[in-house]
Length: 114
Image (cartoon, rainbow, N blue to C red; front, side, top):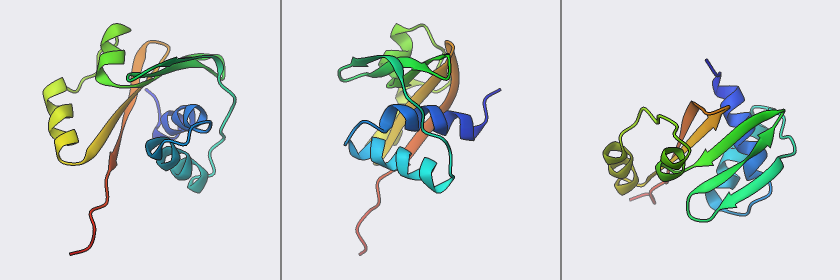
């Protein structure tokens, strides 16, 4: 029940403060779509897993399969499939809103031209 723009908005709100390449890619896409990037309240970094906090009064988690499992959120994507995508050069980022999986963002690494 969450639109792609809502998912991208909350992910970009978290990513805005980071210099990580994945965060930059998410923020860049949100800016292209002219989506708001709001402040994150009660921010907590889960090193190696992701982040949690509140955006627009909603409880948000952005991160890995492991973070979602620790929070008891059904990912709908098996860890095997996520690992397969990562081996192919695709990063998988899960976004939950109010303890429900809201979306999955995949970022495909551009390969150099042959």
